[in-house]
Length: 295
Image (cartoon, rainbow, N blue to C red):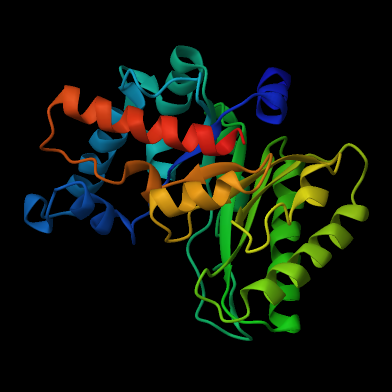
């Protein structure tokens, strides 16, 4: 574990940029970026186009470590290059931004009110490769749709079990048990989720290091106990389908909770924009998310 990166992630101001759209969400991400499915006729071309989009974001003069602590990468992005450097090396060595890796393979169908993660074949090999690529930590997402004690318990158990494997490889896990913002039981789900997380944390060794990525809570400062836990490096918030404006507004009300936005970060960016237009719009987005993250 890189101690300099750990200290920066724990103490510095800023937020995490989520640049980890996977195969299933890539066509939608490209369409939002102004590239229709007519522009590619193979998965390879599709991923090349989305890597060009991510490269444009990462290389932008607006994308700096003054506002951004880390960036979450898709597996193919980790194995791709920017200016003849692996993406993670470019992020850290050229930008001073900490690289993370999305490792989940998507979600199972809903059962007991939740969507667990699909099995992750070859996880040991992936984590070993991530270390070689100088990745600092990993991220994995599951989703809570309804209030169901059994389902939420399964979500938390799965997240912590995988987190233990990741920590065992010297990486810092980001556990992401998302609560759907449209859940009619969002408040109840958040309360039970927090209780179960704190219970699991109490059983970990004192030197455990975990990051949590959670839905912005309905009650402001709801995760303050989690944020102050000595085993928690950081608690970050996903935008969860909120617009950037709405996500920022909600984030402002939660002190020391920082952003880890994906769609809300790249909202409005298109391939057709000039570099000046693109960089200015990205800069405005980064500034607004940064200000919400340092409240």
